[in-house]
Length: 232
Ligand SMILES: *[C@@H]1O[C@H](CO)[C@@H](O)[C@H](O)[C@H]1NC(C)=O
Image (cartoon, rainbow, N blue to C red; front, side, top):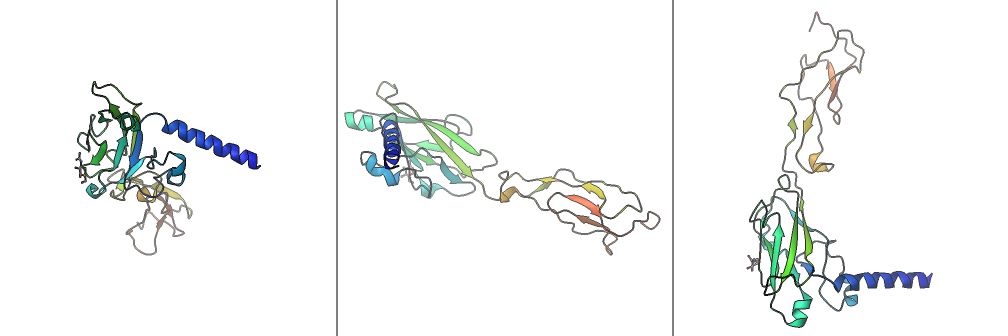
C-alpha cells in the first residue's frame, strides 16, 4: 500500500513538473477559495508562485476594479534567460466582441477587467495569453485563460404569453387539468436564480375557489367545487 501511495505521489509530482516545465504560467490574483489549485504543493514546484489553470470567477453586475489585476501571465523562461518579452492576450473581450472588457499590460502580463459584466450577455470568456520575443515569435506555448461569469439573480421571470386561455367542461371531476401556464427566467439555468414558482393571485368567483395550481409546474386544476356553466 505504501509503495502504491508513493507511486501515486511520484506521478503527481511528475505531472506538476512536466506542466510547470512547459509553457506559460498563469497567476490569478485575489483568487477566491477553490481557485488556487496548488498552494499546498508549492514546495514541489521550485518554490514558485501558485500558478493555476482553473477558471477565474468574476461576479456579474459588480464593480470589479478593486480586484484588478485579475490575472497575470508570466514566463519563467524569459526571466531565466534575461530576455526582453512582450505579453499579449487575444479572445472575446479583447480582440473579439465585446471589445474593451479586458485590458492588459504588455510588460507585466497583468490583466484587468474594465467593465461590469453581464452573465446573460456573455457567460464566459476564453482568452489566450502569449509571451512574445522581440520579433513577435512565441517564446512559450500560448496559454488558455478561462473566465467564468458568476450569476446573480438579476432577471425576473417572464410569462411566455401575455394571456393564457383555458377551458373546462362543466361537472368535471375534481383535480382535472384545465391548463398550464409557463414562464422563463434568463438567469443561470438549473440554479435557484432561475427557479420559477407559480401562484394564483386572484380568481373569480373568489369563494369557494374553483381552481388550484401546482406551484412548480404551472398546471391549473379543478378543486372539488362543482362547475356549472349556467351559473358561471
Ligand atoms: C490594472 O489595475 C491596476 C490596479 O488598479 C492598475 O494599477 C494598473 O495600472 C492597471 N493596468 C492596466 C493595463 O490598466
